[in-house]
Amino acid sequence: MSLKESGKRDGFTSKFGIIAAAAGSAIGLGNIWRFPYVVGENGGGAFLLVYLGFVLLLGIPVMLSEFVIGRKAKRNTFGAFKEIAPGTLWPIIGVMGIVAAFVILAFYSTIAGWTLHYLYISVINGFQGRDTAELTLMFEKFQISTFLPVFWQMIFIILTAVIILSGVKKGIEKYSKILMPFLLLLLVALSVRSVTLPGSFEGLVFLFKPDFTKLDSTVILGALGQAFFSLSIGMGALITYSSYFPSRTNLSNTAFEVSIADVVIAILAGIAIFPAMFSLGMQPEQGGAGLIFMVLPNVFLQIPGGYFISIAFFILLSIAALTSSISIMEVVVAFLVEEFNILRRYATLITAFAAAFVGVFCTLSWGAFENVTIGGRNIFDMLDFTASNVLLPVGGLLIVIFVGWYMSHADVKDEMSNQGALKLQVFGVFRFLIKFIAPVAIAIIFLNAIGILN
Ligand code: PFF
Image (tube, rainbow, N blue to C red):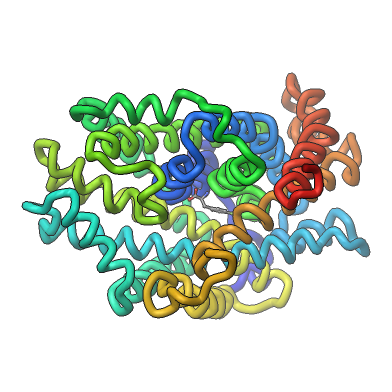
């Protein structure tokens, strides 16, 4: 039965379920795969600092704005704007979000597929006896091949669709809750091993010592894109999720807690990667999208019980990827179900098929389609850049303008305070950030990156 037919919307039940589901959306490949490689490409410490600033000043306010919109409207990301601002152009934000969700799903499933393949390699003990050069070569061969990466990508998309089909509560809440703490523990273990490898200290210096000469407008836009991608904001994934939140959820605390958890996991991933990388004699900008797949197997080989740790790591990373990809797919599915009255299972099938189709082109970006490039970017990089560095920040910009300037002060306050039940200590700060700081900052970063301001 579709949500429309049943007459009521599914929802989350416990407080921990809500935070776990939102954190499950935020914490994923963005933290563990994307963060280390964009930090590597963008010069390390200075990028990290700018990224942290963006999470605090722009990310948390955008996330909270999405929560306000979603829980107030209780609709999908397009329907939410139609509900709050009927007869206006604001629902275009929803359309942009759906496009972004679709694009992200396509390339996200590529990397999730790599993760599943590496889980398989771990199980068959395939890293054993290989040195750094051989492990790098093994990855590169896999990356340019056709059958295997596409096969694993399809498996991942099917898994995502199956969870989506099992419904919101049972599906998302159950899977997110138990597993994320284990991922945290494993990352701590990997970090400890990484920093105790010989010659690893340089890696910590790279990650934490800011070299401001490395900052330019592209690096700054990259930090903004990483912050938005990692926090799952700017396209309405969290509008959709918060539309299932009960009325007693404390939105400000949830936004704060989810963002902090997200940052902690990303930094831990950085500590697991960079020291090991310097110890292995690799250059930080060298790995590209394959960075973690080249570096981490070396670390697993140097840990007692590394066989089991690598299996556990890739299982947990696959699950972290799944809890994120279901939030991405849910944006499109909820839109199709609620706006076009399509049955949930058909909406899921349509979305999965379409994402799989575009996804194949992403996966073959290093192989069959390696020659399809624009300005040095292959298909994968183009889609990643467009979604993360353009669509999400523009979406975020419009979302804060919507909450800051279009919605009434009283409505926003009511929603944030649960109709007056909660004391709002940070309302003034939030309002100032979304009305002035966030829109101006995002606009300047863009104009700068396009070259208009310099
Ligand atoms: N935040 C997820 C991650 O870090 O892996 C990816 C993501 C999910 C991006 C949902 C955007 C989104 F709306």
